[in-house]
Image 1 (cartoon, rainbow, N blue to C red):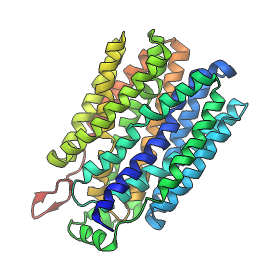
Image 2: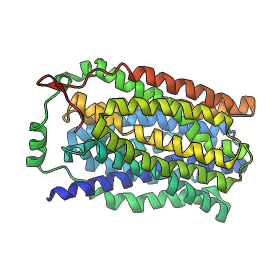
Image 3: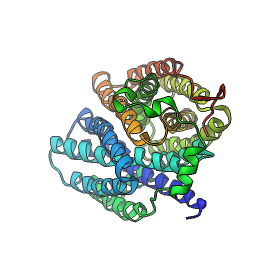
Image 4: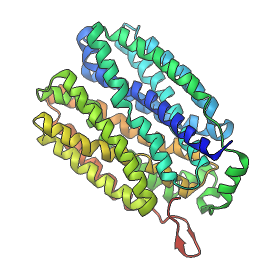
Length: 405
């Protein structure tokens, strides 16, 4: 296979990430119509997203380990089948508890089948421009708010039936994902071996897994990832509802969500290029600082211009920093156990993501506003900066610190 095929892997990873995360996060669009149709509470519906993140974390660890052993293709195939099935089943349920179980558990389990396997196989294809390649895969995930969410809003508005809209999205996920699975391939052995031989193996690469998960490298990465995701998950999930609370119309409020996604696409490319040139660690730390400050600024948003401006900064920043954790994990731990390491990091990040939707739903139900959600999220985001400052040095060769390839 030509080395140009590596860009097909990037395309496949981006497309599958877009569909998987887009369908999961579309619950933010479904929340209000479901509540009006069924009488279920906002907190009850949002708790399905909390379950998504918890199960996503556990599933990510499982899928990452399986991808290290059996390859990425079989893992993403199983995830694709489960994702469509979960949405079809969730569109038919009549009980909040059953909805929480079906949507929260099955969607979370299936969505987690794409991140660690596709990040791992993408980095195996690249020895140069690795940060950019991973950022482009992640950019597909960032495009989710610009694709699935507006489509869900249009379906709900046109047919006035959230169940039909969710059914269509589930079937559409099958139509897109299942053919794309067959584009996923491991790199040629010669190329993979050459790339591995050309870079030093970090000391942590030889550790048993029991020590890897207790190492300073993993703890610093994992808990920074946790705090970063805990900070932005609530604002992301409740952004449409918050904008509507501030007097912005439903369809216009969805465009704010889409602007965040578009900014995230540009942010991933920008931060990926900067990380290749300046190093991953400083770029990540600066990005985390910007994220914390812009979340706090949302408490002062009052009109559409404010929301759009903040959405560009917020989306570009949280989108830009997310793929950098995977690049750092490769630098610290090497390629052999990368899927497992990313799965473990994903578990911590998903626990962080689980707090935001539930906290936002609780804050609104208790205080009839979202101010405490944004204040608390900003403080957690600044905490992520402090943890990131404790990152251990990257592996060295000949006394010179290695920068990400």
